[in-house]
Image (cartoon, rainbow over all chains, first blue to last red):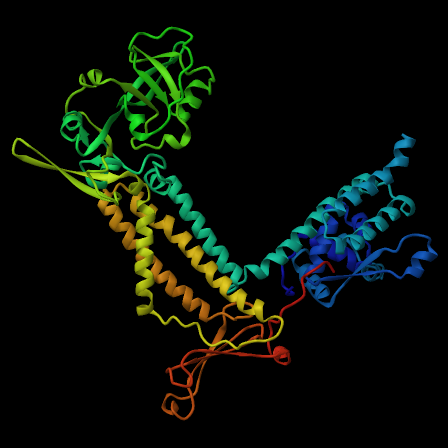
Amino acid sequence: MPVDAKLSHTAAMILQAIHAGHIYGFSVMQMTGLPSGTVYPAMRRLERDGLILSKWEQQSIADADQRPPRKYYRLTRDGRATLEAVYQRYPLLEKMIPTPQSKVEQRV
Amino acid sequence: MKRLRFYTPSLAQINISAASLMLPRRDRDDWTAEWTAELYHLCYCSATHKPQADPLRFSLGAFPDAFWIRCNLLRSAALPLLQSGSAARCGIILSALAAVGFLLCLCLPRARTALLPFHPFGPADLVMISGASYAGAQAPTIPLENYQEWQTDTAKLFSQLAWYRPTIKNVYVTHRHTARLSVALASNNLFRVLEVPLPAAPAAPAAPAPNSPRLILSRNAWRTWYHSDAHLVGSTASIDGRPVTIAAVLRDDHGRLPGKVQAWLLEDQLSLAQLPPHAKGFVFARIRNSAFPAPRGGIRVMTDARDGVTHCFDCISVDWLARQPTSNFLFALLLACMALPATTALPLGDYPRRRDRLALGFHTRRWVFLALKFVLVLAVVYPASIALAWGPSFTGSTAVFLQVATAFLALLFAFRWILQDQRRRCPECLRLLSNPARVGQASCNFLSWNGTELFCDRGHGLLHIPELATSWFSTQRWLCLDSSWLCLFAETPSPSPGMV
């Protein structure tokens, strides 16, 4: 997907949530307040367009916590570039879902 | 409440399992594992009490997710089929055109009549007598007085003659309800001449008036106005205040006589004689074997000289009339096939003779595709020519000429296109070849060769088309490329798309 592609507000929120470290589907739901029927199809679409990438976490980590392994998502290089472009369209996005880095900057 | 809370994760898991059925088998396990893991985390690891943390509500989101994945897979699978130049796209476009042509025919009443034969029954010696050639098959043209005179004068030509005239009559249907139906006043031998068997009427519940005429209903009128009453036959109806006996209900395929008739009122000759002598109607007749030698199809002109004036009438074979649009089309097809070699070269080119195990599929696919295009073009042109010729209110001979002319031109150009299209397709994947490049110099034609080269986007091979046909290079030639060339081509066949 080109960098200047126009994302919907929902997709932009999900992208920002993943960027902010909410890497699991349910975490994205909690962060954005969107229902599962919106978040998961949107993440599939973002993954299809090459903006995010999914991976299964290691079995050993899941075994240590005595739970099934979860699938996590992270931004690709295109995803990061798209997000930078999206900030111009949705200026409040960073404030709505702040990344740990921006939180530190705000405190400073 | 506690029990409900205990069952909720199980119900949510059932929802996820049900939604997973929408996915292809290969993606199902991965997808279910993700949703199950998230559900587990929600139920046993999360401390949030937000509404979306309700397991049941969370699991309902699995349905739109599975549905989206399924739709996306279908779209990905359909995309290569609809790509420009693909064989599937060509087939889909031709099929759509054929469907449009047939729909158009069905929407135009006259074209529908031509497409669906109006008289698929009747003996071989049945003819229709018309005063206006083919137009007489659509509108009444024979005055009653002519019919009455022919009954005695043409005994040597025809064994039986029947006449009917469509009119609009008020039919008393049920209590306090009168319908305006298209009723044909017909001679009482009409269905005997047509050889349509009429079921014997059961005993009438109420005694009909003596010598009351018989009313034959079409199946459509019986359904619409009498609500498919099974006990209708034998009862008495009233037409313009005159009692008639409902004698039978015709089958659907017997109701396609010209004139859009909903019911036939069979009258004796005395009652018919009370009509105006100039009232025009349709005449059907059975020709005598001795009068017309075989074959008896087509049209024969009958002259009627009275008072020094000669009138010409056409005796049109009903069997031939029913098959006329098809006959016209077949005639146009024959003309187009004969003219085709004059407009384009017939050879499809030299293709290498393969001897591997895929050789049969390689050749069969090409020929099947070619045959399919011919069939689809026929399916496009046939209804289109009928709609164009018979749809508007043209007279019979104009319609015949129009149908033959349009079908001939359309078939000729379509066949030409089929052959040209076939020559420009890759024999492996049947996609259109692209990127034509001129090679060689015309001045060096006898030393080297010049012409055009096209190649398959998927790297299956090159097509050489000579500029001038020579004894050693008379027609286009296909050169297969092996798999080592594939790296040069951007569009190589990719594996089927799946979920990441």
